[in-house]
Structure formats: structure tokens, C-alpha cells
Length: 114
Length: 116
Image 1 (cartoon, chains in turn blue, red):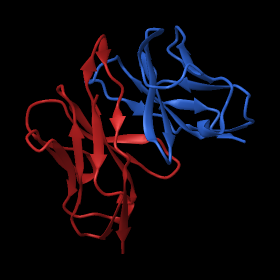
Image 2 (image 1 turned 120 degrees about the vertical axis):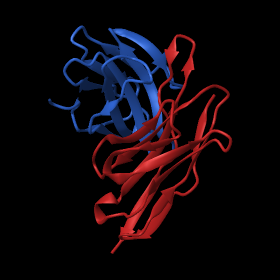
Image 3 (image 1 turned 180 degrees about the vertical axis):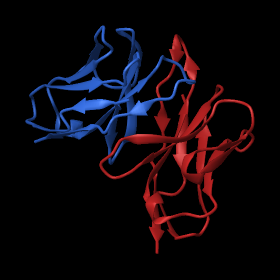
């Protein structure tokens, strides 16, 4: 079974631009979560989607948004990029939402903002 | 709100020696505990988890952890490490609030360095 796929793997953007990252979950998984990983703040939860609905949201500004499609694929958008948005963005999928369902992580998208 | 503290940012260990990576958490509600490993340029992989039941949990690659509620700890151990265990290890918690499960709250990570 194929794992979680994230595209693109690497991305360079300029401050002020916007960016969209994509995540394809494991087949059959309906929950997708997004995390930001930086050297300073570590791993932080962004949001979780289940059945096309945002279930939970971390403490990030409104510039960070996401959505989930009917096939469970998810996209994450960051508008008006700032230098501090440079990070590894990880997507994780699970069968359903809830702590008993293991989250499987993708390899991440490394975003560099210049 | 919950938080996770990994007491050591870096742990050097000789190959075939035992290792313990320390993790403490704080939360006002029941927690569910996890250890993840991250190899260079890769995502996270679940090593083990504690949801309920026996406080000693066994995971993949010979790792185990013990949940200690009174000390709010969930330390990770391995009796004999290998070069291939060199990686970043993250302790994490999840709780339930409002409409469902919160996202994972991670510690800052511990870099395990295996010396030959």
C-alpha cells in the first residue's frame, strides 16, 4: 500500500507570495492532519480535516488555511508569506479521527521563503 | 493546555549500550502518549503508544516505554542500541477537548547519537 504522498517536496517562494501544498493520504484514510516543523518552535499542529470538515485547529494565524476534497486529498495554503514560514510541512493521515487511530506521516514539503 | 518536555536535546551512546530518552508531560486531562522517530530527510514514524492498560508498552525496533502517571513521565528505553538507531526522537501527547481529539503536541526532540 502506498504511503502518504506530499507534493512538491521542495519549494522556494518570495516573501509576500502565497503557496499551496498538497497531501495525498493512504488509500482508505479519511483524516488528514498538518504540522509545521521548524528548528526554533519544533513540531506544531496546524489543523486536521475529516470528511471534508476541519475538525481541529492549532494556534496559527488566519494566513494558514486548508481544505479537504471528497477523495480525502488535502491542500494547505499559506498567504502573504513571511520569512518565519520557512519550515518543513508534514502531513499525516489516519483511517478516522481520534487518538486510537495511528497517524502515518509523509516525507514533508520543505518550504523556503526568501 | 498540555505540554511535553524532553529533558535532553542530545544523547550520545556507544553501540550495544542501553539508552533511556526522557519525556515528561503536563496536562489537566487524561493524555494519550506517543514516541515517534524521524530519520534525516524523512517524516515521522510511530515507535510506540500508550492509550490505556499496561503501563509498559513495547514498540518496534526493540524499543519500550513506561507510563508513570504519578511522575507524569513516559521515558523511552532500549537495552542495546545499534548504529541504525541514530535519529531524532519525539515524545508527543494527545488529549480530547471540545468536539474531538486535539492534534499531537510534541516535545522538542532528542537527537540520539550512536558512537561505534
